[in-house]
Image 1: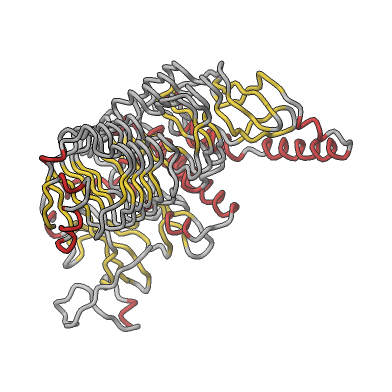
Image 2 (image 1 turned 30 degrees about the vertical axis):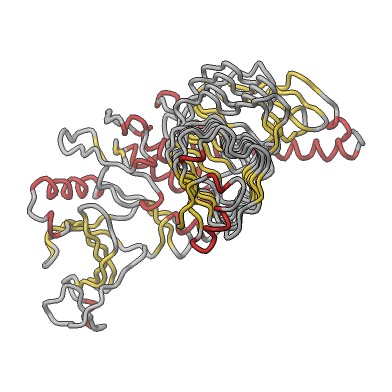
Length: 582
């Protein structure tokens, strides 16, 4: 448990946290040592009495004397004093302590919270031991009809010696006989759906929270257990902690694994490993609870095809088993899930290489966040058109179009899309990937090298876009017919190619940095609303044919560096503007 000593420049008797001698350690009066950081209305203090350390849980000064909070503290004590389990911090008393008021007295745990323990990269066996001890503690207090209601990493301590679990903070916990003080507080990230909806809770609400914690402990294992713990309907979750334990750690799975390994070794020795490279169709990837993906095996890799049976949250697995072999799932085939109304959320794993045309076309119940993994190499036209995703995160670094259909409309008619985030690791965007979107917020990475052809064509919903300073090239049609009113192009951009801003007839202000050398044909054509054009280059850039055709340049103010005004005024094209100094 992390401690935060209170430093005092005046160690007088009036100070709450006092120094003490060895002799005073055996006093029957609490000597207050350090305050432990805490949130909410509780105050945690490390203290010593009888030569032993304790933690005193009291109310912060602003809550002392308030009947509601006094009763909550008393309720927590009455629940926690009944528990005696090695994986639950021990409550030993309830006393009034000078300068703190009423306090729950608990044993002191020399440990750190679960999230800190996980940051130390513990072994798989240590992680399994932690999971087992959490489940054993949950089984115990559930048998006493107690629901914790706030299982999360910061309420799970792991001891420094032996890495043993101690569950803490039953301040939000509940028991059947309490008809009052059922505080609806919770930690949203780990709270069950029924908790968020303020419905009556039972042990399955803690099972849901454990599932969220399990994902932190084992991000890439026990996927079945995680999914079953965190189902939206509590009736479809595990009924209790013992059932979770059996599903995760029952030895029969280890025996089966050994048998499979032996069979694979034998198969290799017999020279039949070439079977792995046979092609097959109609292979099912089991998702649990009767749901499955329909796949084909092609040249040793799996491709999802039409005919899958899915519902709710769909996690595309990294691999598919067929016979004794496992095949990486690299492709979601053309129209694989098109018009599927049962998909609510979608998780795409790292390792996925291709999403083909119309893969999720008109999956109009597909909501929330969609992340395109960094491994993605190809994406087909209309792959996510007419879905209801609200956030798009692009991590794919070297993605290209898998077909030549124009326009590709990858996210066309995604009317609920509010935010688009291109990850900072992305240097090259797939051409036209972000065309036709209408987000409230668009974040481009700081190290983006170029805006490809048609990248932001017909994008609307935003007034202003300030392009990354790393940008060097704006390719043809990149801003074709966008709805931006204000566009700022950085100093490193050297080329703005043909049709780049054509028909951006909402744009009133366009600023181009001092590095510009070339503006291509029709690049600034038909910009009907343009009032101010700023070019920071000292010398006029080279222009292509009909650069400003359809744009009323005589009524546009061109602002350039003061020393360059005359260069622009005598230029055959820029001289038609109203040239002013910046």
